[in-house]
Image (tube, rainbow over all chains, first blue to last red; front, side, top):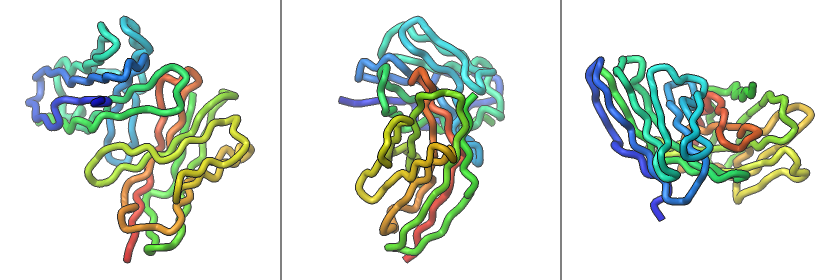
Amino acid sequence: NAGVTQTPKFQVLKTGQSMTLQCAQDMNHEYMSWYRQDPGMGLRLIHYSVGAGITDQGEVPNGYNVSRSTTEDFPLRLLSAAPSQTSVYFCASSYAGADGYTFGSGTRLTVV
Amino acid sequence: AQKITQTQPGMFVQEKEAVTLDCTYDTSDQSYGLFWYKQPSSGEMIFLIYQGSYDEQNATEGRYSLNFQKARKSANLVISASQLGDSAMYFCAMRDAGYSTLTFGKGTMLLVSP
């Protein structure tokens, strides 16, 4: 039982490059979400999904795309990376009615 | 919209002492849940304790307890008998009414000294 797996753990991008942060869970959780963590800001919600084929925006969605074609996977796409997207990204999952959320180990992204 | 406020950017405590980390919240939902997470320097998010809005008793998990005062909209974390390994960032968070996402505070950095 791997829980929530995020890849890669570290990434350096050049401004304007695109990339996909991967998130996979093996717990059959309906709900998945992406957060970014910046110093002094806590974790802020980027996008979330309540099931396959259903996604919605969070607090800071600009510059990011998501899709949810399967229950297990919820990738986060950076279309054209900017230095302001330098951050630590966390994926989390839970099941409907749950009182707990499982977090991945995070991806540290630097955009230069 | 939900909001979590953590007013203490940093806290210092000596080993074996108790410490209280403050958290206040704002929501219009009648049903909600409050969480505390620990983030050590290694970066992972570690779940500590949960309190549901309808729970009448304060939650406890080992050395952690949540001082829930619904009328004051506060959910303070109390760590008894602090240990050096408790040095970390601590986040208070609230789940939305649909259980699908969390709203986080900005965190409190706790340093435990020998």
